[in-house]
Length: 238
Ligand code: URA
Image (tube, rainbow, N blue to C red; front, top):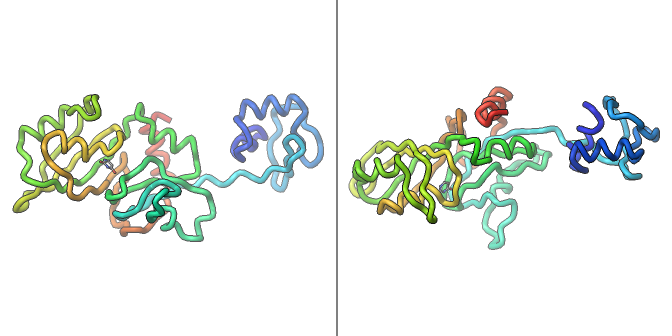
């Protein structure tokens, strides 16, 4: 790894700024001031930036969690409610954080990572990564409402993008609807159903891009394999 990437990955500054600092003579490796940008890091190198020894950047890690209902996805909650970070065991040493959010009452798939570029890529609305949900809603939804949801409904003053919607099962006084959206607006699925006169009783995210919840148990996490990470990045055009 080149020194400027090492400094950026350690969270000191951007790669560009690190290059400027090297050229300004502010970076030392093993007590020698660097003068050029091409230095390739060797194992056990000690790097100083402006006189401070910096810690090695964390290895990038990628996880999938089955978030249970009744947890917040913020790293800390002002009301002290349970937080998904409480479900991460001590074997995960890296400082991972959730990519996007799920409401307190929503369960299902959540991706966590310490790779900021990856998190930005897969959560940025312009990359349109599809997220699939199972929603149990009150009443029996009519075909007309399903069509409206597919075309887009106005929530918070703006029309939602086209969605995939499928009435999957009918119970006595409620029904199960599969809905896949590419945006990630605040409480979007709940608000979309409200817009067509239905209240969401239960909501579960079962798929993000090509990643499905599969047999992952509630409250558990597993590592994403490199192919899954790559597949998500490809979807985001990276
Ligand atoms: N839509 C919602 O309404 N809530 C979520 O948690 C996710 C999508």
